[in-house]
Amino acid sequence: MSPGAASGSAHRGGDTGDLRARRLRVVLADDHDMVRAGLRSILESFGNVEVVGEAGDGRAALEVIAEQQPHVAMLDITMPELNGIEVTRKLGERWPEIRTLILSVHTDEEHVLEALDAGATGYVQKHADESLLRSALQALRRGERFVGPDVSEEALAARGAPENEQVGGLARLTPRQREVLQLVAEGYTSREIAEKLGLSQKTIESHRRNIRDRLEIGDLAGLVRFAVRTGLVPPDV
Image 1 (cartoon, rainbow, N blue to C red):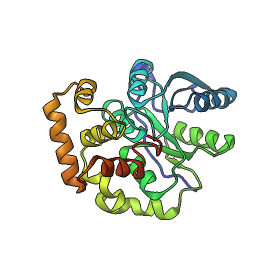
Image 2: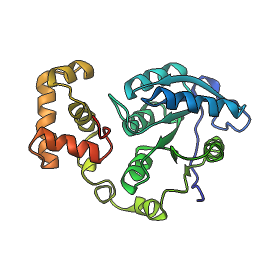
Image 3: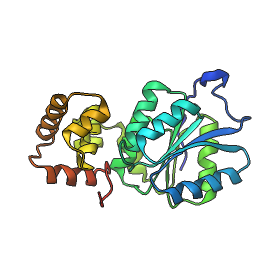
């Protein structure tokens, strides 16, 4: 599939957006240790890629990225604490020059569109071979978008549709509400969520009510099922 063009901006610390002659600095974020170990081995075998940090959940990923300022953040979608799409959104707000490559088991239109609309510059399936991963990184070096061949043309064409047609129920929620919903689905209490996010328990309870109203889901079990269906949390949460 032919990737579309995407512009790159100057990297903090003196790096420029043109990475073609540079050693690519990458941060890996996936909640499975063995997956990260395998990816690290593959990436370092390329010779011009350096893995400068790893994280097992989304919040830790943001901390590592803030510290290391990599060229590329390679993120799984389904991670504890903060999923990869929300991490992508936050990177776009804080460090838009950092390129985001989503590496996921999800190939359906909803996940792909949400990742691209969040600002991801690449999307590759986890079962992809090494040559495809190399091609994705080469595209990101050139400042281009890369989407793996398992993603349908229909999914990319639908990107021009209105947001509520693209990603369904999640589009009804604000970024903070999606963040709260993920933590609720992972089993955290309102008090625990308030502590994690630095908010009051009253504010979290208000978010929970608004989430139920916007999604028209009245019970916790329904919210968990919705979070699983949309990829916010894994099925075995």
